Amino acid sequence: MKIQKKSFLVILLILIIGIGIISASSGYTGTGFSHNIPFSKYSSLSDNDILNKYTDTNCVKEVSGICTKVVDGDTIYVEGVGKIRFVGVNTPERGVEGYQTSKDFVKKLCLNKEVSIDIDDKKRNDRYGRTLGVVIVGNKNLNEMLLKENLAEIMYMPPSEFYPYNWAPTSAVYKNLEKSQTTSYSSSSIMTTSSSSSNSYDSGNYVASANSNKFHISSCKWAKKISESNKITFNSRDEAINQGYQPCKVCCP
Image (cartoon, rainbow, N blue to C red; front, side, top):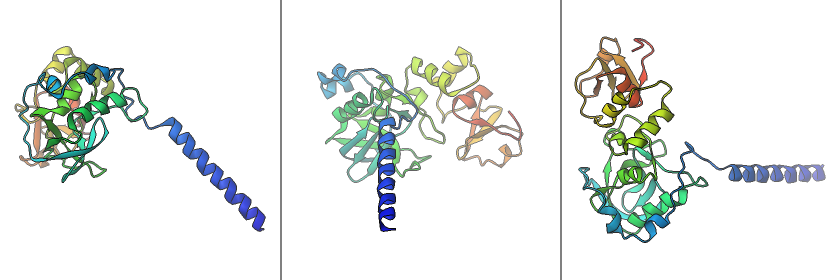
């Protein structure tokens, strides 16, 4: 009986190790975003060479601290603040092409240096407890820089104070919409959406709540329950969908 029990434990241990090896080899790839930009593109540049390419941000420096660790291209640790997740963007996961370049780009500009954070007022933390926000380096928006350098993809997840489509080059906007939407959009509607801010809509026929991912026609019973302080309006159905909202199943906008 003791021999059988020992054999069972040995087999169980082997299975656990085997599963661990398989999991490690497969790797988590997240959205699958990747790029082939070599870090040699930036290694010979100084911080100022990179930062001077960009205009000063209008984001607010709510908190500041020394960056003590760079986890990857979209997550860092800031002394006195904690773990920060760059809002609105997504860089390659570990084991995916482009991971190291995106990470090294952020390390070059952040590690052991003071950075500031504009915390997302509409959604302060993600489900992992990380603080969501824009990372500000040298008065520049690093989230925006990652998108414009093609080191990250757009990851817009409302509700959010920030609208990353405004930061990205037009090519990235098209690519993201093609990837995330199953319906087709005219180039004019995409350009209109990419140049507008999620916080500055004109009055429209479609509405949503900042606390929900559903949108409605203005006469829907659920639309009428949305408080004015949380109400977001859209000029078209496409505009609402482009920003990540889903049609209400009651009014079917």
